[in-house]
Image (cartoon, rainbow, N blue to C red; front, side, top):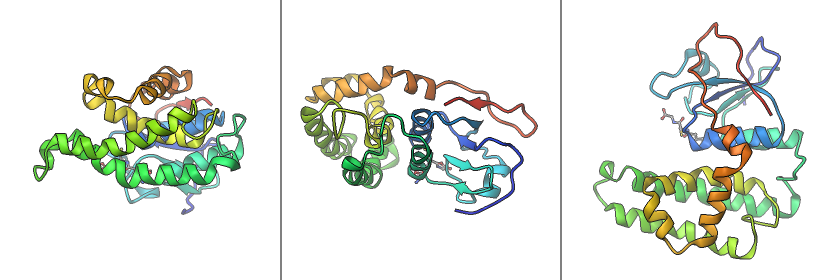
Length: 220
Ligand SMILES: N[C@@H](CCC(=O)N[C@@H](CS)C(=O)NCC(=O)O)C(=O)O
């Protein structure tokens, strides 16, 4: 975390609608009922204001009114829910397991997801091989979802909102294939999330942000 001066009274989120990391951050903010100023960006043309506070150049980035910069999606979820967590997504009972699952998502599943999605950029393997590798994680999720309605319990946890955007991305590479796989509980879970009012809200389209624009409030 770094500190810089900002003028707005709201935390400011640099976000890209289609980025799964940014989706989980927006979901975290919505589940925490936390209002932020939303600055929609595109990766091809990152605003200098964002790069000035977070030179690594990934979204999401959240800048707090005191200047603190949070530049990891997991930390943004944790920060938001750490302040307000009416649905107890950070329930102590599942927190450790959620961390392990999100690690697996970010460090392993995402690797295969990228290759499955952009197989032509990774000619050393075939798309079918990449899909199979990605499915190992999907199988683990399916097994969890045979035990519970949500990934880790009978109620939503940070694991659900942290992982759902990536499963969505996998499914959207080829919806027909995804829905023909033998993962009925995962399909049900994904469908539930795609229709969830907070996910629908998280996917609202906003115009690209430019310096001088009126503040767009992303309402929690
Ligand atoms: N570990 C970061 C990863 C974020 C990330 O990689 N975001 C992608 C977009 S989905 C990005 O900003 N990539 C930079 C680029 O493509 O220039 C987090 O969890 O926030």
